[in-house]
Image (tube, rainbow, N blue to C red; front, side, top):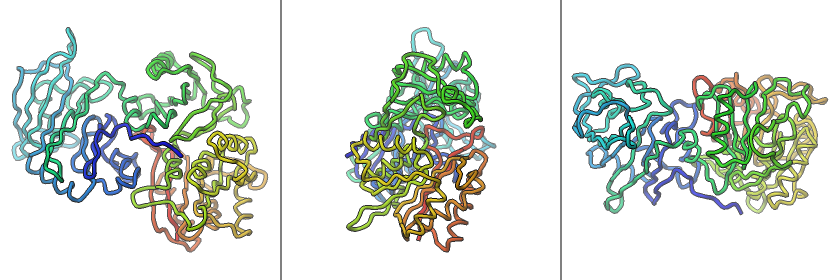
Length: 534
């Protein structure tokens, strides 16, 4: 049985309220339908008891600190009323490298939107904030710590008024602040009346402006008791275009299209120290995967100790065997962590449970099993699993992953061969499954099918998978393709469903998880959709 830890960012939960310490760099909610999940979206779909979670107030993406959600209709009404009547007290702290006028004062203005910013303007909404200088952050420092208590709740209120009085927040370049690693604004405390008892509730999140904001984001979403593998640096989304770093147990795996620069090397060593790693490897991302030798494609040690031949990591309480010596891939794709968790928990999203059958185990087909990550999670949840892959080596690796987790691999069907060929064979045999997982490589080649390209052949793949899906069953469709826009991916999937004369009962789309941040310079490459089919 998997032991679950509490989500690290949660600071309070009861029947009516959920409060978190939101990390900087995470939106309160998704800014658009196919963007990365905000913390609200990620939480609401994570646990069945959070399915009714409601947004009552917001924090800017780059602001950290206390964020409160309502869990019940009573809480939503009460908190909305308290915010409207200004009975909720909020307290912020921030850093500035400018002079602050006096020890304390109250700023009053009227704010209106002007493009991406807010400015003081006659006729705008009333805004009032009490500022107080707390002093330098350390003796002799040019950085000052300032507290801010907003008496009204206007968008960007503290940011605008601090800037207009000559001390913009450090990192807040939109309002004239000095560029830095983040916007150094933190919601430190909220005091409210409990919706059910009216007793005062004081919610606090200690500020840590010295923390690395990238690591703070990961600490907020990773449960350290059950997961020791996640992405630490994700390209442009973390300010390092073209560079990617994963934590895999006690080792870091760095990846880019060239050798490490001096700056990347220094950062990798710094991260290894902060995370107490034993060693760090670097892999050059080659487009010639099929022509390179195993040593050429494998990661190379660049710092610390040599990793063991078999490296074991844990994710969502499940153990996996990895290896840095097996060529291009080390054995697990971390961007599917949350989808594996959905299979493990039997819970896809708010009001979307995986199917089960009375008196019989649910049956799951993992059509591109690789090292059987999805398969292990489904089996651990009690399902009967069929794992299909074109590689005997990876299926054997999958068997070891079953054994690692106390599961009998002899109770699992392992099928070696081309996916299209076997999907047709299984259909002719009348096999039906409750869940079908389609997570193909972007490109592959087999004797039976020839060349598979995900954008070209995905409709045929989904069509073949649907023939094996029971009515009311769930299809997980995934695609890893940078240049394939989400609407086109979804249209392809839905066209296959319509062509099979079947309908969609439920749909839940998710991109890569929050430790793979999405930005304009580096849009989402991973696209996944869960569909309940009639």
